[in-house]
Length: 588
Image (cartoon, rainbow, N blue to C red):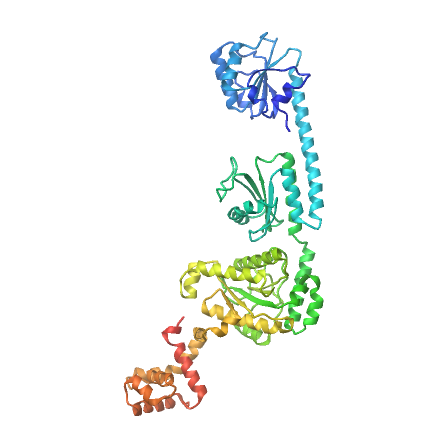
């Protein structure tokens, strides 16, 4: 505790007497200052015990004393010490009355007590308090360090920190979810601050903010009444987590040391060394390559304890792609690692559409790519990794240029949070019906995800193809997430809304359209009616309102113009798809 007026009064060597302000003696004293100026206020910082002999004051004048004391109290002076036996044998009644009226503590200093003795007493008490604070801070740091390296890790550290602060502490992950809290009841209180944590995470690290309490920002939840300090964790500009500490009053010096130590220790536990990051990147890349190459036994041996549990149960293969900027399927320039920890670099840098088709056909990946920088992909990686960490499951996240490849346990937390993330993005997109409209309405939600069916290590290549196919369907349907099981349940017709397919269809039907433009018949409509009736002449003719012989003549003209036989089922199929691709229902 810093020195107070009460501690000075109780100091046996000083012999101070209280004349006014008895109820304010517990006020801390920041310094003892001597001034004989009639107006010392310009030289006050607040918190001082002012010592005077009244050489320049008319201390017996009530009005002057009221003005003098009022100025001192307004400047934050916490007490006034009056030297008795220098100019006045007793403390003037006017000064005592003014001090009582203002509630300012007034101390009578006997002649045998020099002001320097009071200054030394205050200085010694301040130094002793600072020493206690530093000592307590070092002790807290030792205890927090022991807790951090113990088996319980951050949970034990938070418990020790909360005890030192006589309050509560909580740790948030990169997604803003509460990872641990101490005491246990603090978890619910910490959950109310999610919005404040999100705002802090949006700032470049390191950053801090105080919410709730006097003089602090208002908390996002009015139910949070205590003072809460939020500190970002991380050595770079990207926040890796947030520490929250709640107390009933502002932190003292010792408590501040403890919080700084906790921030440093938690940062060490959330950050990985560069060498370890590179090792994990190479390991994840190697595991995925071996799986796609059909070598599950080698992949399991290389995965070891880091990813081994992922290969012991059915997993899902996920391929996500950011559709912002250069467009889907284009490689991005590397700049940062994705995820709340170092995520292994990917097996492939996405290239042209032909590359995508090649990978879907062969189940293999081209040369290794670079970490992605797209915000939608980074957010997805953070959410999945945080969910996996909370549930204790392994997840392999591989950046791949402008996309992301993920192996996650089937039915696990990472897959579940991916679905929730996609659902939230779909909800934000609203009711726009076309991909271009949705992209314009919700910039930053430009993300498509393909999810394979459950698979094992031996079927990893098949799972990769399934995820690629689901991704393609998601892109064409304007969906955020499509699972492979949903591909067969949908319709193939939305897949026709592609520029290449439309160009093929226009070329195939151009000659028929040119014929109809001359007014010599309606071959396109007749062909559509005949194909829709599976070649039944009478039914198709009835739909058109013409005689069946007229329809037969038109179909012969179609064969002559196209140079192809309608008896060939492949020709009928291509013509039908061409008609559907150019119909208004499938137009992009």
